[in-house]
Amino acid sequence: MVSTAGGETQARDHDLEKAGTFTVDELVGDVSVDDYEVLPLPGGR
Image 1 (cartoon, rainbow, N blue to C red):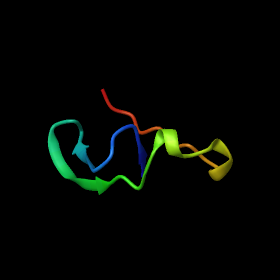
Image 2: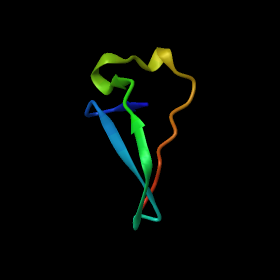
Image 3: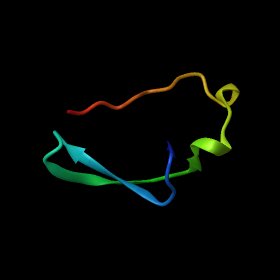
């Protein structure tokens, strides 16, 4: 998981209930577009 902030990020189920956490592996500023083949952008309301 790549994020703008370190630590963990909270997943949500339909923006209403907590659905677990994910550990951030790297920060956005520390990675390169050449390191990845796809960029999923999770949506929400």
